[in-house]
Length: 80
Image (spheres, helix red, strand yellow):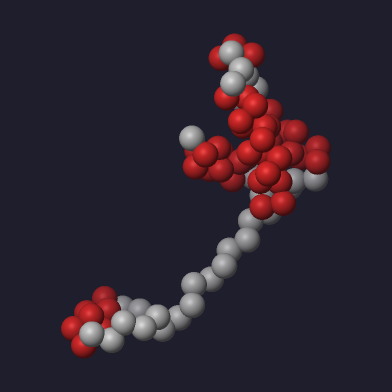
């Protein structure tokens, strides 16, 4: 919806959603629980003994994940 249409809608008091939000699914959704448990375990380790996210993505690739590194990093950033 355009900015002007939004203003008209607000001015008239009509507050209905005109279009539904798209539900995005990620290839990482299947591995989110595994990654979450891994991140929790790694956060308790000593800094020198922690694995990095590149190693985490490599482990996920071994399990069948075929997504990019930046998705793994985004999930890790959200969890922090």
